[in-house]
Length: 76
Image (tube, rainbow, N blue to C red; front, side, top):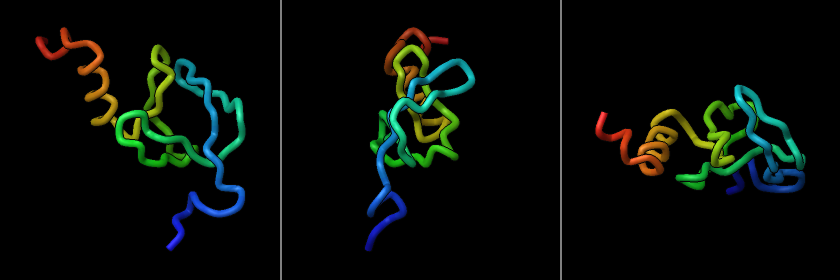
């Protein structure tokens, strides 16, 4: 069974992540979450790190990566 990211024309995009926006540098229909590896359709991409230039599947995954990257946040 093929998912919606397989088949002809279903390419992974390359993205430059900006504050509050992103810029597609290489066309595609999805990006992969930096933590889970799951595909994220570009029209559903809402969470990313500008500093690390990484996309995240959702807010929970984003927070997980942030606390892993900065252990001092766990102490707050």
